Image (cartoon, rainbow, N blue to C red; front, side, top):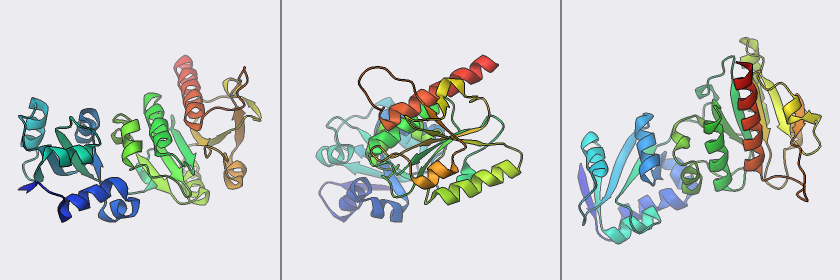
Length: 271
């Protein structure tokens, strides 16, 4: 199905709200994906493409032509270049994808004997969510969970910051620690002894001194306030990252990356 958008009509405004309005994005159940690598990763990992938006006044690259040919039954939207640039948030874009969201179901995250998951509690910056997702993917995590009143993982800033990793692993929003801990208890009852690990500058132990080869759910707190008391109470252990210099703490995404790296290092060494 082919359509054309040459002015800021109702269809263009609808697409624009997928970028700018969280509530309308989730009500529609779809989001705009920008960039060659993220779109390619979405397709490779089987995400449902619902529309492809492309520059109607230029010769498209082979990549774009192949993508359109591979999805003949979704909406193809031929756009004026300036309007496409607005949605792409850059001037030289040739194609964007509208992708269907996946459900916020914790059971999408597989928890086997080598389980490694990340909870990001009440993140305020979409870019930090994206950075955590990217690190989680890089170091072998099984999924990322955001909890509480938080920024949206489907925000274009978050998706861009993952450089495609968003599509390679489950990213799920859960309303509360209680819901996540209920899921953890189910995993434990099924024989996976998940250890809930919090991070704080005043931890019980140095991160390198704790056994991270066991199934781990890593807790990362809000960028300014840290973890809620509910999450602190739920943690089995609180670990600290040794630091020198004048910095009192690390950015939340950086702290997550350090612990994820240490977990990966320990597991490789154990093999």
